[in-house]
Image (cartoon, rainbow, N blue to C red; front, top):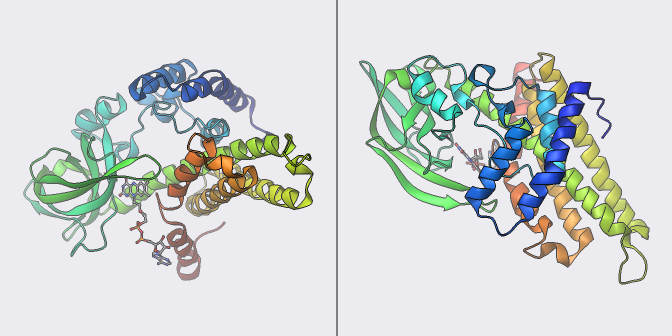
Length: 372
Ligand SMILES: Cc1cc2nc3c(=O)[nH]c(=O)nc-3n(C[C@H](O)[C@H](O)[C@H](O)COP(=O)(O)OP(=O)(O)OC[C@H]3O[C@@H](n4cnc5c(N)ncnc54)[C@H](O)[C@@H]3O)c2cc1C
């Protein structure tokens, strides 16, 4: 792909491509290996190719990797439909980035070493009388409330929870999964195959030192983490667009039972061209946003716009891809069937499309912010 990448990033992209083609695709397609073996083999291969540490901070043995480089990596993995495989990347710090003691030794270090797992508790249910709140009592914080959609929450060792601290404002707070008063009241899966939990907090008593940063800083911290994930979603979406369009290209050129390949028909070509136009637009947004971020610009709005557009485009591309390939693409062993389920979640997770649209409009209309 002609992205005019600097030589070092082009080399990383090529390494990623070799890893995807020679190792990850065969692993993905091997039905004889179980989930934990798959994770272990993917991790080993990723470490060997130098990808595993790209998401980790340098002072924890990570590799300094620019947004552009990570974009090229995730785009490439998506183009082989392997970006979703477990174990590809080392755990990142998330909202714990830059914390001091005691959180550093007790949570951040074991998290980065893969010894502890974290989850993110942000979304509140519709019916709660009050969003999750905390009251400071000396050097303790007592938390009550609930979070309705915590991915991986049941298996996590701790949850980073957004808590409204009385008189101080919102804060992200580390809460041990099995602390007294922490209750999982529902466990559920979603159509992309991921698992989540509904949490209730009843007088959960944590040290005040479990507040990440200062009380009042919770929303910007949470949004920074969400912003990073939004760009990840966009890059994976762009890669998947390429995977689907390449697959459709082969299909349209292949013999068809009518005697003429489908790609010879003008109506089909119109649909096919639309897929390419939209994927190109989304791809251009993504690479531009990554470059702006690497140049030190504030890319909040560009990231929102790219997340909305890329995740909507990949939804359209997969949907039309299925239409053009026909009924066979809905077989449960067809890659498009799995992709259809997987990409649907991207328009809700890390911000529903229309809510993000409202935010983009609000920033410009009410605060005169928001260059895009
Ligand atoms: C796979 C997946 C994983 C998730 N993981 C986590 C997690 O780990 N931690 C966590 O905290 N949350 C998680 N979530 C929850 C996610 O953050 C929310 O689903 C998302 O923010 C949308 O909130 P909601 O579902 O409450 O929808 P709502 O906010 O109720 O919105 C529903 C719909 O109403 C419409 N709408 C709402 N407000 C407006 C408005 N002002 N203007 C116009 N239309 C509007 C939109 O169409 C919107 O899609 C996850 C969700 C998914 C799907």
